[in-house]
Amino acid sequence: MSTYAHIAGLPVRVEGYTLHELTRPTSSGFQRISVEIHMHGAGHTGRGEDAWYEEPDIARFLEAGQAIDLARASTVEEVSGILGASDLVPGGENPLGPLFRRWGFEAALLDLALRQAGASLAAALDRTARPVDYLLSLRLGTPSTTAPLEARLALYPDLTFKLDATNDWDQDLVDAITRVAPGRVRSLDFKALYTGTLVDTRPDPALYERCLAAWPDAWIEDPHLTDPDIAAILAPHMDRVTWDAPIHTLEDVTSLAHTPRMVNIKPCRFGSLRALMAVYDHCEAAGIGMYGGGFFEIGAGRGQIQYLASLFHPDAPNDVAPRGFHWPSPGPGIPPSPLAPAAHPTGFAWDDADPPPADPAATA
Image (cartoon, rainbow, N blue to C red; front, side, top):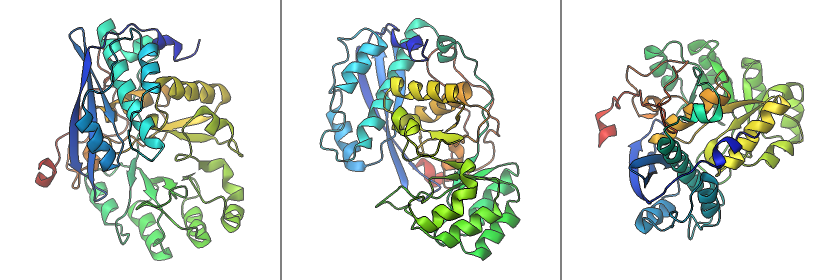
């Protein structure tokens, strides 16, 4: 029995939904805007988060309000079908936008259906929520310095990290990182598959040589394999190459030229519950490890990806750190890794244990 089959037939009554804009400044220096979707029915509310990031698309979504009739369906599968046939990002040009938005709707749908059934996601899937190992994904500023690492380790000396390896990482900086955070870097993200964004990196064989030598056990995420010089450097290290940005479907996993030991599973990139759970099933059957990731969720979505990590890959280097680390000045009180299970008794909900932002500006 597939994982999705456990929830596809859940009865659900959808009477409508409302949209709620969320805004927070982040540790990466940008203002995060997302939209919580509150789906209502039979006296219950299910919550999901549309983590799409293109502001014109977000503005049109909020202006449209309740534009999709979901009341004519009566099961999770039927409502999902309506969402799959709907134009979720009218006027949008990026093909990822509809996937992110559909995930927000389907997460809210699943939460609502489970609440109406009086069941938790763990119970519905016959799985146990386990403590979640997490690391903190971090960029080191512009220009890069060790200051962001030092500030976080001063409060949380046991933190481990996934660092964005950027083009200004010279040998002096790499040496400084290893001194400040010895044994703390578990993953290096080269972001080779982003184009036209603020986080693009250009191919630089010397950067790879420095990083692979400094961190011989770290995961290597999204490297520039199309560059022949870099491919030659990576050849002895392919067992620790992992992928994030290109993974949106099961076919994206099965068609990889080199079968990875580990892949990054970001639920919002898959859009539907069916597509996400097909990848979970395949990776478990094929012995491919998984770790979770997100997109600076600032609402219900963050807890939901932690919940999924607790069910499917709790012991992996999950990029699902509590939201408290996302504020410009993280303060004390953020739950340490591993996160204790916090699944709500009903629904697709993970109880919020994050402290409020330490920076007063973050509440503006």
